[in-house]
Length: 233
Image 1: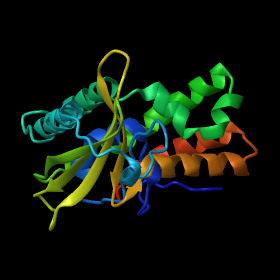
Image 2: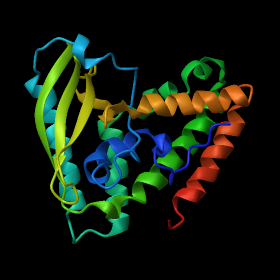
Image 3: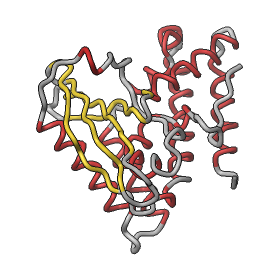
């Protein structure tokens, strides 16, 4: 059975939505300990069109600045920051679609009740892990360097994390989609050349393969990793 520990170097299972917003804060501290959101496996950037999308770039920069403002606010309590981040996640990411994505082929076989139980455990685990990293921000900043339009409404925005504890710029790519409501949402982030939500899905599917599709095994594992995530390391 695949084990996805919040303290392991790769930690693909830090869980979707929250860490997309925390990428600029945590990537400089532990670049491979960031799990990010995804909706579909991104194609190689080289196959994308060379166009830029200023609106997508502005979205990433705006959200990054919002996160930085919260992280850098010394007047805000930890509990207030947690509450703010939970609200930001629901604004920026489509959590139900992300939750479906990480289940891969097993999503189709779950009942509504089973999916609900998994979604609750997945979200609680995500909250626990990214909230435990709120204090890792050391003054890093994010700058947008460009974008590539894969197709209209589907854009990879390139950025760099600099300053703070980073000795040299860390490249972070954000995949953002434009919804029917006209709003952009981040659905995946690449750090150190890895689209980490894809890795997360691979971990979850591997666990379910080994458990003969028993979603309760994955739910129990998430709950166990949630407890592990809050332990001091």
